[in-house]
Length: 480
Ligand SMILES: *Cc1c(COP(=O)(O)O)cnc(C)c1O
Image (cartoon, rainbow, N blue to C red; front, side):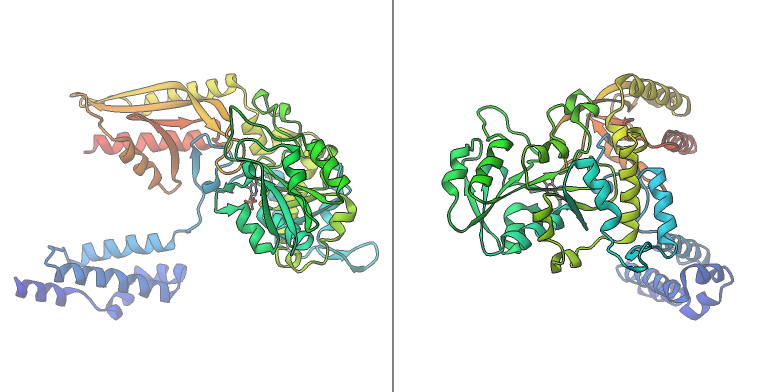
């Protein structure tokens, strides 16, 4: 036995021998010699360790080279990759939130690949400010007197609190001390900014008099936070925005709102489910001094944090070191400006996130029906497996940690496989794993033993890819 191990150990070729192999030349060129060496080293030590553990490993040159090449292919693969979203969650936090409009992508490429007037005033021939490219259009869309952009909404909240409330008290309702996905917690941001959190009211009910009672001579701000990812029902109360605004004005305080998602159009333009959602324009018209929101949630643009509001308040943020630290880069600005321009001309369906949220039941049902038909053709039942492919209604979502926990009704295709004896042929977990392991991973939902492909979030060309995946699965099953 030990002899056998020794023999196999000696059969493993050295690094020099491997690097001399002709087939490695193209890999060295693609990945760099160091990467090829590292991958070979890792693979060879893995084999040696396995041999020492007494595992029966094939160390023939042929098998070895095949494994090495597979490892190189894996190392050469991009780490950050596109995926296919068949989950029906539109603003999917883990899948990159919003998809940019094609037009925004083109403008982004133009700006990123060359020089631009990012911080240059072409009229005067002098230094300009990067914020100027989007401020006017943001004001036009929201009715704000001034606007600033930073890296993201958490950054926007941090900047506002740091610049306006450091060392003073900020009153927040206990019902709004939320945690958003990605561990954004209002109390933590507050502490980070140096502002002092003063809680008021109760979890389910906070009244205007609770705010009034919480105000001291050290208070600088009333802060309202969109609960985003949860919804309270039952015995609940919170004061009207306009009443809070009046209270803040009367006591000489700033009234700020963290709106989270940031709707730039009336909720009802997205569909009946959204009629209760407050858009940014309404929010400002009801007396909020400044409001912050994300660019890549329901707005459908790139990751950015917007601060819009009264000129006098916004001007106190300009020049703050946090603004400099969280400044937006040129690619983001280009994509954001273009997205805003699409809003200005009212072409909402050119923005993928809005188009997905606005989809009609009829169009989703038709899409699911056609996808189901194609899948039935390429993924038929076999002698030992009963395949059931059905068009089903599903529950989609705007997005975890980004928007109200609004249920959205959608359509999908469910795929169930059973062996003739009745047990699941591929467990959903196994099937999901196979789809996830593809070059273009397919992510989908599940219901019981069935896999569910939600059509709302599919992008052009995705159906073809799904059909191809199931055709390959059939092929593999046929070949054993
Ligand atoms: C999502 C969200 C944030 C964080 O925004 P990012 O753009 O992810 O930084 C902050 N506040 C609320 C209410 C949110 O919904």
